[in-house]
Image (tube, rainbow, N blue to C red; front, side, top):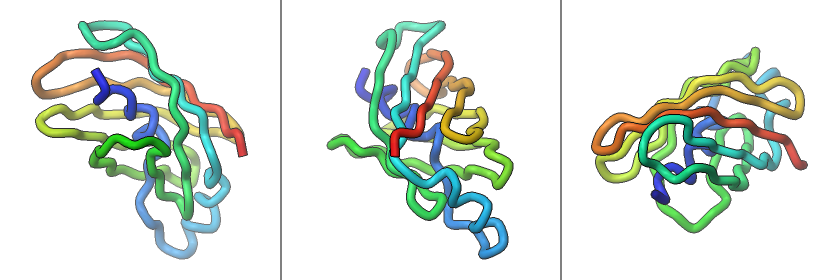
Length: 122
């Protein structure tokens, strides 16, 4: 299921932050390699994709069209979602330095859940 391919993107998704918070959040800017693993449900087992974070906002580095929203808090906490059509995934976790991890679960048509790991590449 291509939808889950961008769950990792949501892991580092952020919205534009106010000036004081922006200075702290920009440390997460860069290129991230995100691995998404399904632990429960009938979704594809695993994906690895590139995510680009600029000014605290994330965008997927691939050709698919997804709606991504969420925020990376200055302390690295990730609360985000990603959707495509009626499928939606909620993502929770934390970024710290050059890595991050957390969990995800879908809502909508297909029930799946799992974990994600991210590594900053540049």
